[in-house]
Image (tube, rainbow, N blue to C red):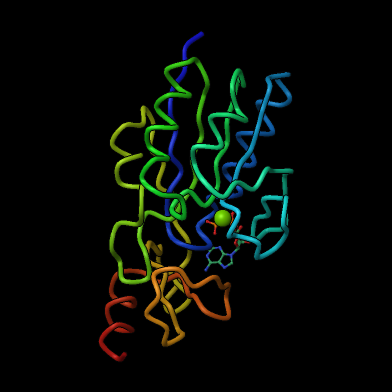
Length: 182
Ligand code: ADP
Ligand code: MG
């Protein structure tokens, strides 16, 4: 069996989770064995489900550490991972091992943090993946294509869980403008 890695990346509200759920549902229709994981710290909508901003959802297993995915996903046809940016760097090796053993691995996550910097294991995952899809949101300021997640709150923590109350999808000029005003 041939395995590979697919990455779905982009800003907040860009449709990463929607696209992940779409791909996983199609694999289920093909009667493939599918498992979905997310970092245990992401409980914004639901403890066990992966939920998109468009309210589509799929049952998932929250795991505290990337290594646990190896123990739980052995022998799966398709392994889905959402919010991958919250895992540590060992997620890269976990995905490579799963793909080497024949699984199709679909990883969704933020490519950049609120400062516009590459986020956690995402850049390395994009390097080792066979397929990388960058999806885009709509800039809430001007309606252009958005690739940045602008944080409205003052917190400087790398991880600050939040939704439209804390983050805005913005295009490059509107993101820069917001950062200068801070
Ligand atoms: P992600 O996982 O990338 O954060 P989701 O798949 O959860 O995104 O949600 C995508 C959905 O978010 C869109 O289909 C749309 O309904 C909604 N949405 C809210 N704000 C925006 C925005 N600024 N641009 C695009 N979609 C948005
Ligand atoms: Mg998402």
